[in-house]
Length: 286
Ligand SMILES: C[S@@+](CC[C@H](N)C(=O)[O-])C[C@H]1O[C@@H](n2cnc3c(N)ncnc32)[C@H](O)[C@@H]1O
Image (cartoon, rainbow, N blue to C red; front, side, top):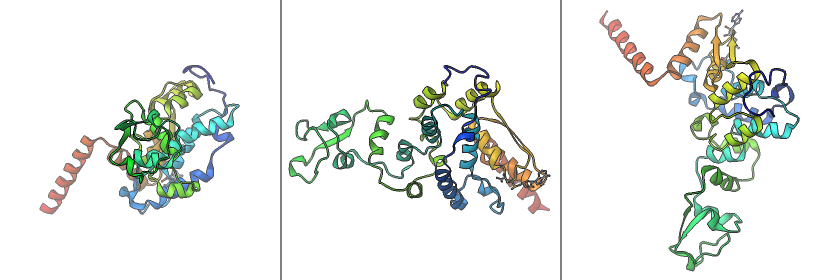
């Protein structure tokens, strides 16, 4: 891959979506999102709107259009799955429960447990795990993560604790990526940047840099059949500039609401809530 963000360096590069897309995994993710019903991000604005395109699918399509297909499809797929929170370490973050050090030491084979954990008092536990905590000589021993093991290191180890399961079963048990969006991607950026020649630490930065490499500017997404606004909403959330329109005024209203209510700032939501109360007060006074 190219070194650094060079404008138009990906101008003629084939897009990933032309070569590969993990549709079975995407299907499992999209199904989970659709089944979330009122837990979906935009449904509060009009659950009767039936033709919604799942946000996770929109994300996959946008990234698939921006990312280049290189001569290493396996690597391309691994990076795409990291960006989609489909990799093992992301599933650790998507889990509803993170295992405690004692649980990890009871289950995993670790040659030197002090590579990861502090043990107090020292010298009571053997060097290697797994351990049988029912051994009475281990009573009162405290284990904790070493402070210099970063989140990536923890996730790598905890990923070995993930149950053997099909992808669909895994997704069933996990939270949706957007439910943990503030932390799920913290481990991915070194690998993503090394593969793409970017220097991103967030989706906004990545999308902007890929846009410069592909088009010379931040990507623009236009949806002239925007319906409930799912496609432009996800495009904007990823960091694209977006344009949306529709023949149906209800669709336009829902899309406006997606951007200005669900996606609006705390302040604009407060203003809107005040305006709504004022409207109700005036109508009732009539
Ligand atoms: C299947 S819906 C789009 C759903 C949307 N992608 C979503 O996720 O909610 C198709 C939309 O196209 C709009 N539409 C149909 N014909 C159109 C036209 N000629 N010009 C503009 N919009 C049109 C409809 O009003 C409808 O909102």
